[in-house]
Length: 113
Length: 118
Picture 1 (spheres, chains in turn cyan, red):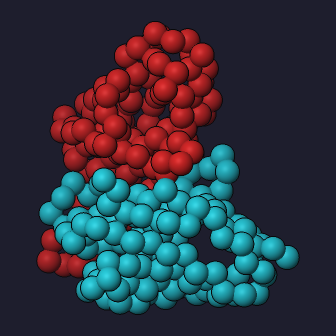
Picture 2 (tube, chains in turn brown, orange):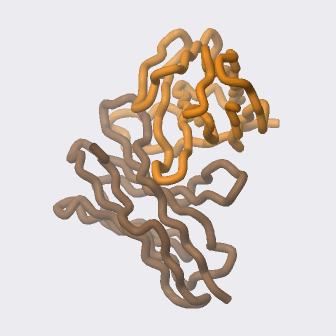
């Protein structure tokens, strides 16, 4: 059973507009959530994270929102740039666990010039 | 250079052969992981390790063996490769979180090994 779900395999937006990537989770023991960005032929790179004690974390153009009651998080990219085109993975880890990250299947973002 | 490196970057092997993928990190992170990436499945955990000589299974461990005799190395071995193990493999490392101090950390990934089993 998938504990982290990214239900949109792909998303296409215009340059300068907002990109919103969504992620849902089922395990209520998850306490830390991360977004990774992946370009072809490269390893995933860390983008932004949020602890379960917060509901928002911002880093430049990237903001992550966490809604614990809905078990939902989202990544907002404003403004979107062509260089943001990549696959974005949502990940979660569990306090008291093994530090392993559980990943969603990813969303491919395409930002059109 | 500091970081996490995987070798080889690309490997073609035959069905039934044993193959080992190497992973080395220079941060002395306690935790190391092996993931595989397949279309439609995202990143799935194969094995992980909390410290030297401590390993445990992840979501898809069948057909794989790991060892961790030193903190910095975490090799992944396919004992008898099958075509279903054709994939891109990623190694990652992560330092400890300190419970109660709200010190969260990310995992760092290697550049990946593309393995093809023919």
